[in-house]
Length: 264
Image (cartoon, rainbow, N blue to C red):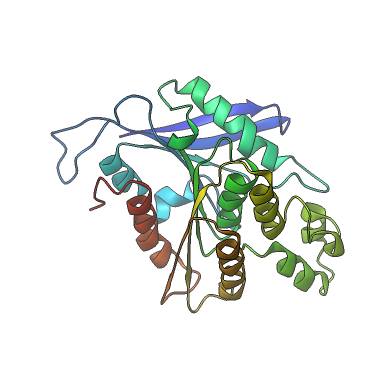
């Protein structure tokens, strides 16, 4: 694998940003692992971080490079600060950046990345789990599959609860708490609107630990998606909001996305 750090200017954000990118490489002589180079255009996974983290965290806390090497895929790990993958009420246009500009920039920098919807995926943890599902539901022409690990997926509930504490952080991102339900940023509304549009629906994957405080929100979105007829794979098992579980379950996500090759 090649691990590349990239600094570049974002027109959507009006500032310089960072990302780390893993690219596949065919190898035979590496001790302890074997690299594959996906044939044709590279299938690409956009791997999103959570609230306390940045573009380096998946490399620092998991073996994502080794897992991706065995699949022969490209992995894009952007930094999006604390913006919740959202065009903020007061702030930056993080959703425009992540859904439109970033795929375009990556494909320009790395021409072997596939442009096809069926080769483009998103996954994230916590805040990034929300972001990954949002990409699939609000930009389905680009992303065919998305996976959430311990996702903060019920943003309406989160905003309503935090507004009681007069926390302006959430209002700066999503606007007034009483305006979030049914908005562009509400995943429940996004799922309904996409279903009603008649456009192709993405395939979705969700996992959450049974000791995680975000579990009720995951249950609510699971039930909503299944009622709407989405192709959803849902799993839960022992675990809290911690990296030991995300390192384990990102491997399940890769098996779900690429069942023809094994994660070792």
